[in-house]
Picture 1 (cartoon, rainbow, N blue to C red):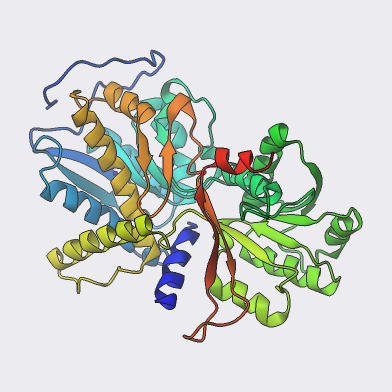
Picture 2: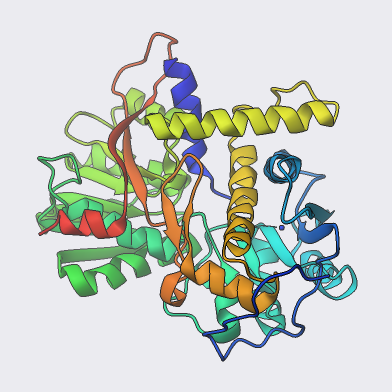
Length: 439
C-alpha cells in the first residue's frame, strides 16, 4: 500500500479538447468577440481537438495523456453526453514541435472547426498558439505545461478564453512564499521569519521568483534573493549570502538538476535550514538520493508542493473513479485494462477531460445553448473540482492555474518495499487559507 501511495503521490509531479435548446446568452463580458458564434457542435457530436506528441521521444507522455482524456470523454458519453451529443476528440501528432503545433492548431480551428482545444500539450505548442487562440476566441481548456505566458490576473475579452489547470510557475511561486512563512506548529508551513530565495535564471526559476515577489506585495516578508545560472555546478556564493543573512528557510525556485546542486552546496557549507520547492521536484527517487548523500537531513529537509493527493478519502474515491473509467476505455480499445492505472500522464489527461465535461454539465444544468458566449459565462461562474485534487475557479478573469496545493516531504528512511516515499505534511489547501495561517 505504501508503494501504491508513493506512486500516486508522484503523479503530483506533472511537469510537462447544431445548437441545443435553452435560453440565449447572457454575455456579461461584452469585450469577448469570438470569430464565430459557435462551431464544432452538431446534432450528435461536440468536436474538440488537440495536438500532442504521440510518436518520438515524448510519446511516453502524449499517448497516455490522450488516453486519459479519451477515458473521461467515454465515461461522459456512455452516460448520455450533452443532451445526447457525444464528445469526439480530433488529434494531430505535432512531434513536440511548436511550428508544427501551430499549423495543426490552425487546422483544428479553421478546417476541422473544433468547438474547443482541450488538453493543449507541451510548452512549445502552447506558447506558440496562445495569441492565435485568443484572437479567434476559441476556448482552450487545460494546458499540459506551466509556462508563465498562461498566467493572467483579471483577464478580459478574448484573453479570458485560456483556462489553465495544472500549476503555473508564477502562481506556484505565490504558494511557495505562503508555505515558507505559514505557521509551522499547525503543519501549515515552515514558519520562516527571514526567507532566502535562490532562483535559476531560466523560465522555471524566473516564473517562480515572479510569483514569490507578487505574493510578497501582500505578505511583506523579509526576503533575501539570489539568482543563479541553472547550469552552474556550485551555488556556494549565493548560498553563503543567504546563510550570512540569517535566512531560516529557503525557497528553491528551480527544477531538479539545479536543486541537486543547491542541496549539495547547502550540505557542503553546513547550512542547515529547510527548503520548500515546486511540485516538479516531488520525486521520491530524486529526493531519496539526497537523503543517501546527506544533502537532506532532519535539520535540512526539502518540502515540495503537490496538486494531486490520494491519501484522503475523497482523493482515493476520485482515483477509483479514474481507474474505472481508464480501464473501460482500455478494454474498449484492445488494451489490458490496467496499462495506465498508475500513469501520472494518463491522470493529467483524465483531469483535462474532466474539467471540460464539468463545463458541459454546468451549461446543461443552466439550461443554456452551447455556444461560445455561454461557455465563457459558465467557465467564469463555476467552481471546478479537480479529480484527486482541490478546486479551481476562473472567476473575475483570473487564469492562475491551480493554487490549491498540498505539501509533502521525503521520508528519511526506506519503507518496507525498500524505497523512499513522499510523506504528506499538509493536505491540499487554497492559497487564501495558507496565507491566513501566516498572520
